[in-house]
Amino acid sequence: MKKFITLLLTVVMVLLCSCKVTDTTDIKTSYNFETDVPYFYRTGDAINPIAISPDGYYFIGDFGIAIYVDKNTMKGTPLCNKPNCDHTDRETCNAYISKSIGHFIQYYKGYIYTLNEVYNADKQYYEPILARYNLDGTGFKSMTNPINLSEAGSVADCFIHRGYFYYSTFYGIYRLSMDNLKGEAEKLYKVKNKEEECNNIHCLNAYGNYLYFEPFEINDEGETEEINYSLNLKTLELKKLADNVAGFFNDRLITAKGDPDKDKIYYRICDLDGGNSRKYETLPIDDELRFDPLRKLHYVQINNDSIFPEKLTAYDSKGKELYSTDLPKNSEISFTPQDENYFFEIRTQEDKNGKAKKWLWYANKTDVGNELKFKKLCKLSWAKIELPGYITVG
Image (tube, rainbow, N blue to C red; front, side):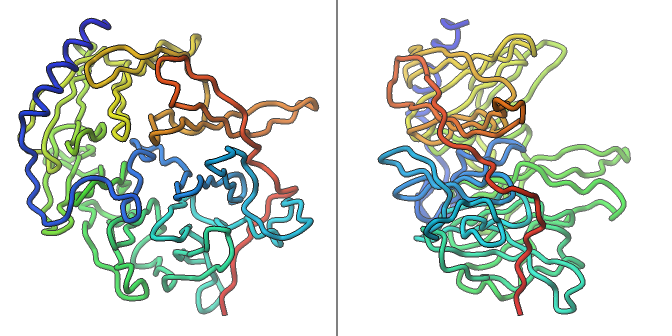
């Protein structure tokens, strides 16, 4: 298995060097820290509640509390500047900055953004807004008008990327210019199903000048199937992808397609719009190929079964195995390669009184060649009671 992967990865790297990447836009493709969504935190349906800033990391914990982790000390604390605050009252503690939909948090051009909810004009129900904060959690500002639920449907997923706020609903995908967030949203994709049918849109992500997503659509036989799309964000050209989006490496798109009959999963490398597709890698169908683009590493995640822990094996760009380690079971953050410095994951553990608590753990990736060692960072549950905690805007 290891020799097989090594040989394939070596061949792939030669192909990568010899293939010209097709980019039809006039904006640099590669990842831009200040303006791009951190795509390496978004794999499949697992959207990790993590943001990365120049000086640290932000996590959304239980009840919407923001935890800040300083990069220099790797210490985690609630994002609250109030003296003597014990961070247990989400109505008074400044750290509770994500008080509604999901666990979206993102750094963009010097600020932190989350989703919150406000009362509608009649104060009868709540509508989502994009909220902005200073890096210390202060300076709350509602950046958008409340999104009209009757038109857009409840927000399912969102992120900021290259000058736009993108969000998906049960009815489609929309975007707002960051220069005019209170303007009218542009509809990028409209679901093709009737309202009563399944309209879920999965795996929303972006890389360079392309948006990727997987809606359920009704085919010619009247059956519901999941379709993979790429959308050119400059030309708005929509293309169907033959396979699922698996990741990105060297400014190229990696796709995957499983074959249960042969117990195999086939990976392909292609241009960012899905063109010029070539064979890339083949693995047992229960294993997964993961990518660490910022460190130029590959990982093969071996999924044994529910009894034994999973394994993660790292390879360098030449296919040499660097290390292999057991993975923690039942973690709530999808175990993706994440950023170039750390793995993060959430574990639920019982305290001495038998009460389940969530803790954030991390492992340093800089010790290449050594087995990963996870360390407990901080707890993610601080509030005493669970309250709605909505924001009222007059």
